[in-house]
Image (cartoon, rainbow, N blue to C red; front, side, top):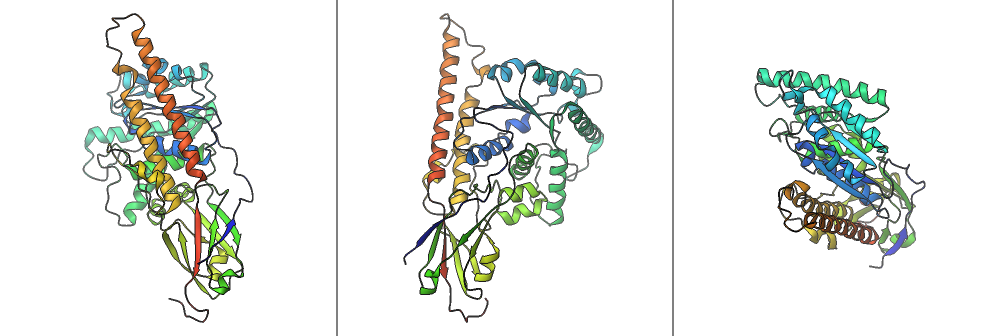
Amino acid sequence: MTALVVCAALAAAPPEPLFRDQDRVVFLGDSITVLHTWTRLVELAVRLRHPEWTLTFINAGVGGNTAEDALARLDVDVLAHRPTVVFVNFGMNDASFPDGSPGADFQRNMTALLDRLEAAKVRRVVWLDPTPFDTSTGPPGPFNRRRVERLSTFVTWVKETGAARGLTVVPVHDAVTRAIAAWKAAKRTENLIPDRIHPGPVLHGVMAAETLAAVGFDVAPARVTVPASAALDGGVGLEFELLGVPPPLPFVLPLADARVLDSRSLVSLASLTVAVTGLPPKQRYRVRAGTVEVGRFTGAQLGQGVEVMQAAVPRIAPGPERADLSLCEATAGHPWANDVSCVFNLLFGKDQLRITMRHEKTRGLPDSVPGYLEKLAALQTEWIEAVDRDVERRIRALRARPHRLAIDLEAPADAGPR
């Protein structure tokens, strides 16, 4: 079969997001941040949509931390990196401290933290309100009932204070709560917050999507229209090379499952609709993305547009296993799902390197040779920056690879629907 290659381009460029070329982004938070999941998905989206940019992303989450702890380590873990954008997420641990203790004073500590970031002239501060404590999987008890009440108070205060300061506030508490309710209403049995505190990977996808939408990232579903030709009437297939289309971002679930979570941003980011005009309306066609069959459609359906990501299953490493970089060279499978899986795994490896080189791991080493620790720190920084640049290079090469949609005749024009 001879394939006809047709290039497709967007009608208009997406609006400029919060992020810019040369940005240095720091994620400051507790164990929900240090899981490196919602943060990695945000980085993935920005890097994959803007491979031409040079960027630095640093995860400064520490498990068990409160806003008070963040204040104590702000200079070393955040300001030392000269950030242009800082994401902040605290509250879960603050809500568990007894009344009157320093760690419990969320409002005072967060006010001081935000003042420090403003004084440091960080260009943008993005504030995620606290995620919910899940009380639906067992008796809450008095301690956890109090935690839930305090988290609710924190959420209200974050929204009011963020608005008064002119900050971007991401309502992840509401988004995660809606997602859990919708998931259960759909009779899905997987527990999305297994330990009642830490959102699982699915909810991290919701958090990332809602964060991107809140900061002005283009979360509109990608759509492109391409013309067909008479080639199909002669039994010759068509192959479209979709150039200039913003890559869809199926984060942690196939599109059908993502729709259950009541997160419009999550679904929109994962979507890519392709309309093929000029085909006989009653003729049926088989559509493939890469080597994956998307479905079988009539010419009329193709003219209206079909979702080519419905068969895409992202293969993302959910835990500490070794990243699967073979996906970066894959020629089989769904090309856009392969892209997301490749970049996630590239960033997974980069994050593991950063984790092993955090400053507290060398803080207690004896400086037996004057200047040795400073040289070690400089070497670590150079190494990490080299890995960042290698990630950028590989993503640029990834975006330049073919992303093809193929259409073949399925049956004669008078065949009935299946």
